[in-house]
Length: 195
Image (cartoon, rainbow, N blue to C red; front, side):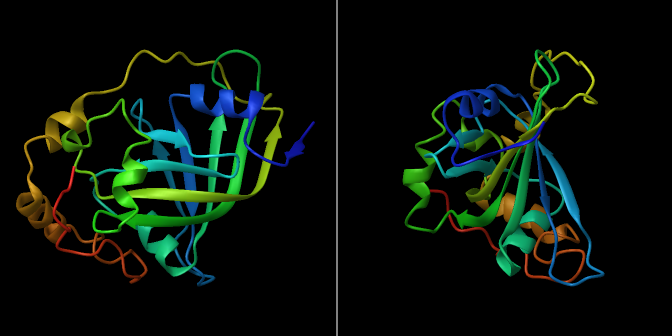
């Protein structure tokens, strides 16, 4: 039922690029640390960079657990489920890295997301994941659900922020600069936008 893949290409790449939502899972090294699981969406905010690397845009939110865990240990799993069509679950287990706005690689990476305006969402970083294990499984237990459209609440909320007000918003949040478990999170203040 399950199959291991050498790389992200062909049918597998098509499948993950067509899904409107995926999930990220990270954890600190500490055995009693908080495991984080997050849904990700917004059309155009995910890209396959090559056969072994994917990336997604990390937007403003109320915490920065994924960033904190990646800064500490780099471990991440991404998962896509088929909520329509034939059943399938794809997981990419690998090493992730947050690429912040002042990183020389940032602008080139941002070019992989031409269909989304990063100014509308309080873009904090681009998460780049290098696959170490790629597997798909049956997905027989995943229900059918319909996708209607993206919510516009995120863009309506964060489109009115500039770098200063966004940094001030993050500074007020308990788990942005530091994770729930006390790990370094998002570096503040945010580096200025170049996009």
